[in-house]
Image 1 (cartoon, rainbow, N blue to C red):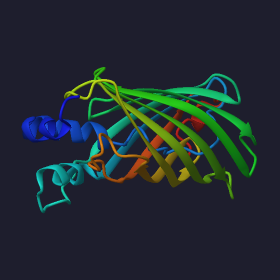
Image 2 (cartoon, one colour):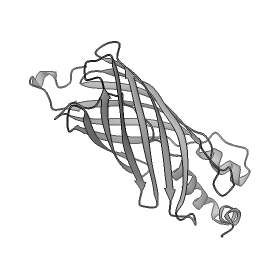
Image 3 (cartoon, rainbow, N blue to C red):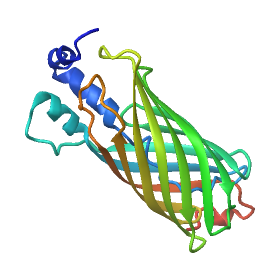
Image 4 (cartoon, rainbow, N blue to C red):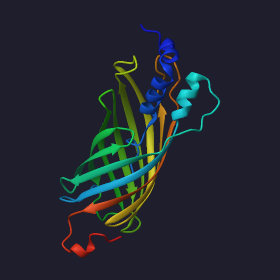
Length: 232
């Protein structure tokens, strides 16, 4: 088997930087959503700004550097469509170059209930070199019509087929929590954390991941009165 220590030490800083960014950019893991699905026949577009923490930690542990606080914020674009009242599907794109697909099924509550729960699956890739999938369980409470508070534990699996790590699989346990406020236009705050479940090649180079984000979403369609399309 190839010596993985030589891989990281001889791969060069650029390869190591790209490798670390791919493994620790967790915008696709963040929820920025409650357990409620998008209403049938209604679309939703979103724009989120994320600030991840963990990229430089992975680099520093390999390169033996002192500075561990550098990180790169990024933007994520999202889109969703309500297939039925209980099922929706969506896509996400990030400035890191990732593209992803997801679906969510709401098995508890509806668009007006105080409590809601849902599950689903998401799949993301970075130019077909890196892949990940997540299986979340969304839970949310809605004290008012415009306020949603959510908590979403999730399992995250990753595959890498680059930088000498072909067919490597590793996984995380994580969660997202946050607040969404609004009606046709919604504003959100999200905090996501993910923790490695095992070491890769016996090297503990993958740090805990933390992601902090803010975003805004717009509902599209589903209105009888066009004057309400930008209603908060």
